[in-house]
Length: 482
Ligand code: GLN
Image (cartoon, rainbow, N blue to C red; front, side, top):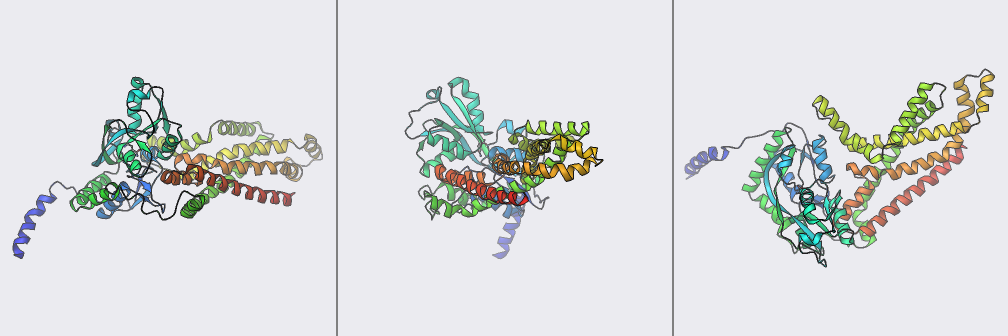
């Protein structure tokens, strides 16, 4: 009997292994980028962990194939950019395989199929695409739904409003800022099953298979491992279990939630850890970038009052260029633009960390303003003092240090405090590159529980308290220096 089984297995083995290309990990760790809110594929559960079909799937495949992963959740559009810029090795985010994307991505085997579908409020009278005339339809940037809407816009005459993430899009639909949304069918259906008062009046349109992707021509072993792992999980039933966990249990509405998230207290209780970590990032960003900005700002400020024309010119150009570029564009340029440029020249992917990119952008931005504060402070000291000191034979450097700067510093201090407050608030802007600081943390929480009024109030109070405390502290320091 045993022999028979053995012989049977020996025959089967080559049959099964036929066509399976084995793949081995090349990197010690693969960075996988994903959406920030796209339930049931990826979303945060009530204990603030990312879960969903995609999260479970990629983790199970990594385990099955024996490779290490690190998951980031910057949002769909940002995840796409991250893979293209080499900041991430792969993307799993309920991503549809479209012909256009095949030009820039290599896709794995598909693990799902999705339509795009229109979602409106339960009370809405919109029942066909024709009804959308002059109405506003929301859509997430970079998605297949966006392509669909753009292609059909002239036919139906609606306006399109683009959102960076699903949370703000659904929020806007709930508050009536937009009349409809276009999103993947399983996502809309899932949110309805979770109690959202929405409906889908029109049948969906196919947008393609859902698959895992890497940047075209890179990490081929990752695609191979994904395919092999997916095949194994399908064979041993684990894949079906993952699907069932999120799709079959429509009745168990968020059963894991133990704390009531409709009260401010409940929100804080459930999310304080995440909020504190977001706050930590915000403070680190503000403090580090401001320290760097002071150094750069003082250098350029001194240049701007220097007796040398070339130094004055350098300072002027620096201030004009940085001040003339919006901070958000500066951050995007550093995070996505420069790595893309370097790659186009060297052929090497050279990603930059989001925290580093955010810090550089904030430092440069604040430095330009600080340079102006320094210039203003020095110029406010009457010129007569420099002239008198120089005519006594004291050098320029010494006059600066001993006579001008001590007076100028006193004039500059209140402006420095002011600039720091601005720097702290500006950290919210760099959340655009997917950095999960305090603001982004709040948005992710809202994506899960739709408590935008209370959550934004909490965020506002967080910033208010921190800024008040820090300005008090700064005022005290200022007095001591005086
Ligand atoms: N399936 C859609 C696409 O690929 C949406 C994906 C998403 O929003 N995460 O464009």
